[in-house]
Image (cartoon, rainbow, N blue to C red; front, side, top):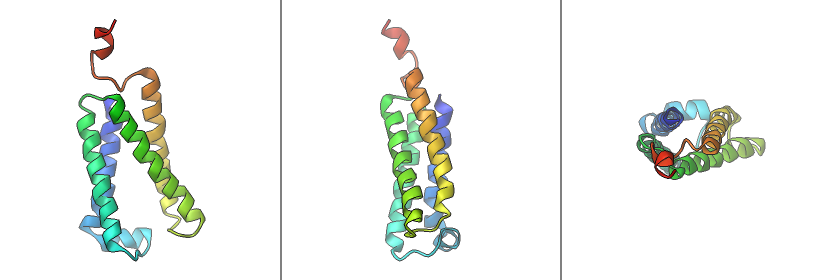
Length: 125
């Protein structure tokens, strides 16, 4: 299912470029940050992963699915753990829902084998 990688890629690009375009509005929603360079670095990395997922959506592979699950899992941990300890704003808990959705969709696709390039399963039979 290519659509899940497209949706995830677009979401990561949108959320990744936000602090690059307007750190002030990003902090207005997510709370003040002490290290602007780190916020921008994470934004650039999120954007890069989003681009990789969009490219991978053209011919999904196990690697595309692994990147999808790994990135969403890492952000889910941050989104849930750090607000509970008061390290970041509770607004990050809201981001856990799309991340968990991306994980569920990717894992479901892996079980169905839909992460493989088109025709790969037919050619191997």
